[in-house]
Length: 111
Image 1 (cartoon, one colour):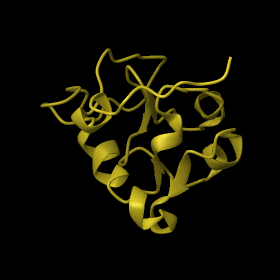
Image 2: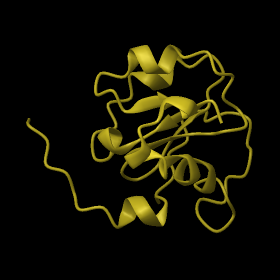
Image 3: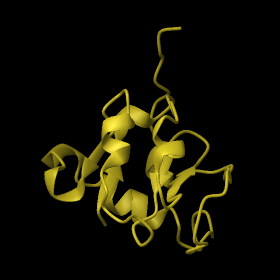
Image 4: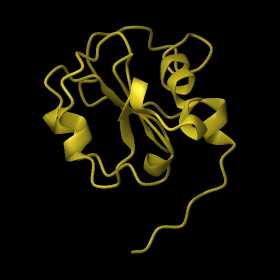
């Protein structure tokens, strides 16, 4: 996996990263966005586009956020979203999240 979306995206989903992704590998769940690990080409454009600094290169993840590697990967499994590897988000919104995200306490954001 090249890039990973982490905590700062939960209940934010700014989405500035989505239109700049040249391979359309950023998918929308109910509370956060997810990067498909097999579709990401490691270009890094999403990192600079994210206004809340939620995206990291996998090898630069702070230790306390390392579990997001599995969360992003497992989101696409048949037991979570069932998306598999569709080859592009195509504006697709999935009405669920990884169980670890669903358990997170909602984050209040300033309006």
